[in-house]
Amino acid sequence: MIINEQRYYSLEEYLELEVESEERHEYIDGEIIPMTGGSPNHNKITGNFYAALNFALKRQPYSVFITDQKLWIPKNKINTYPDVMIVAGELEFKEGRRDIITNPFMIAEVLSKSTRNYDKDGKFVAYRTIPTFREYLLIDQYTMHVEQYSKTDNNRWIFTEYEDAEQTISLESVNFQILLADIYDKVNFEEQ
Image 1 (spheres, rainbow, N blue to C red):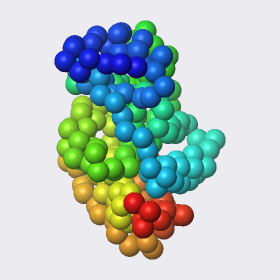
Image 2: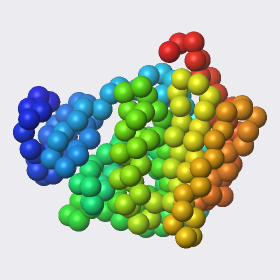
Image 3: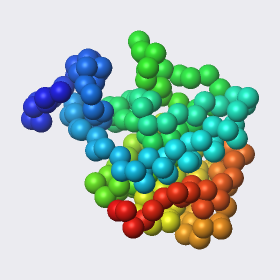
Image 4: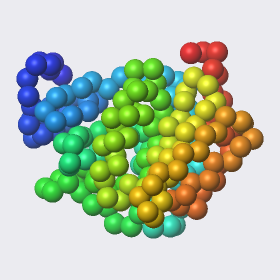
């Protein structure tokens, strides 16, 4: 897909281009931004976390998604593809669509050098406008390090940091625990 960076695209134009594209792109209020390809470590971390979550939540009223599921954030006019996200109960879709969800309660992003700042700041701000959103994990792919942000009932966010392979991450939004060592299973930091 060839995109003129200076042009404003409607969401409909973006979605038409995205269907034909071999690569994924984010849409941010009229701008189409190519998404960088994932490294082997990025894919291992995303897969490890997704597989553990999906298995732990089987036969429960949750849907777990990985990488290719579109998410619409209406307040910021953003269409994005979180690395991992969970929806409770029925899926809610963008009006007129059956391929773009709007109601995750947990999102995890695996950080890369090109997206680290955006994932920590701008994207987190946008995610917080989603009424169902309650928990955010930022997983570093270059070192064993996870940041967890959990929303309390009084609209405060609690920050927890993990750096030890034997530490257990416990999600606050759903009954799920995972060792840091399991998230980073088979990850080779020297390959970076």
